[in-house]
Length: 330
Ligand SMILES: [Zn+2]
Image (cartoon, rainbow, N blue to C red; front, side, top):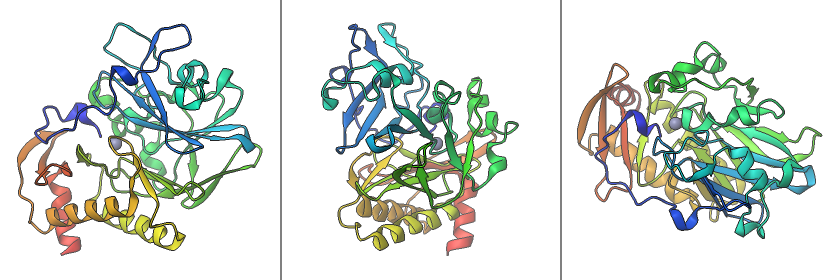
C-alpha cells in the first residue's frame, strides 16, 4: 500500500490486525513498535503496529538454523510511531532483544547471533525505511527486473519518500535475477525462490518457500484494503505476474495447500483461492463490470477507485493504467 498518499480512502477497512493485546513487551518492560507471531515452524509474521502512516506493514522472518541465518522480507516503516509510550522502535533491536511468546519467549535472533539476508518486496517507503539497520552488514536483495527503477537518482521518487517529505534510506541493493534460489553468505540453501512479479511496481517480487508451502507476494495484492498501483505500476504486467504465480503453484504440486502472505492485511490465506478471486475482481474492473466509486488526483495523475460489493477487494490506481489494460486485454 501507500495509504498515506491516498487519505481519505472510501473503501471499507477491516479492523486493525493487531492491537494493544498483541503488542510485544521488550525484556525490560518497554513497549515495542512491533508484534510477532508464528506462522509455520520456521516462519514468523512481524507487524508494525502503529506506524505514523497507518500502513501496518507485514514483515516476514524465516529462521534457517542450518544456515544460521534469519531471512527478513521487508523492513517496515522504520519504527516511526505516534505513540509516546513505545520505546523500542528499531526493527533490528526488536528482532534481537524482544521476547516472542510463539518462539518460546526468545527473540527471533537473540543477540544478533545469526546472519541476516534481507529481501525487499519492492521499494515503497513502508517496506524499506528500516533497511539501513541491516544494510551495513547484510545483503539486501531486490528484483533485477528494472535496475534503473531503483537507481540512487530514482529511489527518492519511486519509494514515494519524496512525496511524503522523507529521506529515502541509503543502501546498496543486490540485484537478483528471476527464479534465483536464495543462499546464505556461506552458500547454504535458504529454501526460498525469488520471483519477479512486476505490476504493483516494476521491482515487485515474490518469494516461494516450497518446503513450507508459503508464497509471499508483497503488495501485488491483499484483501480488505485498497490494492494500490502508483503511477509507475502496470495492470497489464500485474495480470501476467498473477498468472505466473498461479502456474508456478500448479507445477509445484502444492497448489491445494499453499498459503499466501501479503505486504498488508492478508497472511495464511488460501493461495490459489486468493489469486483467483483477486484476478476475477481485476478482470471485472477491466471489463467495466465494476463502476468507478471515486476519482482523485495524486502525484499529478487522475486516479480512480473501485470497491467490490462486500469490500473484500478494492483498487485505487491511475485511470491510465485501467485504459492501458483495456486496450491490451480486451
Ligand atoms: Zn507498495
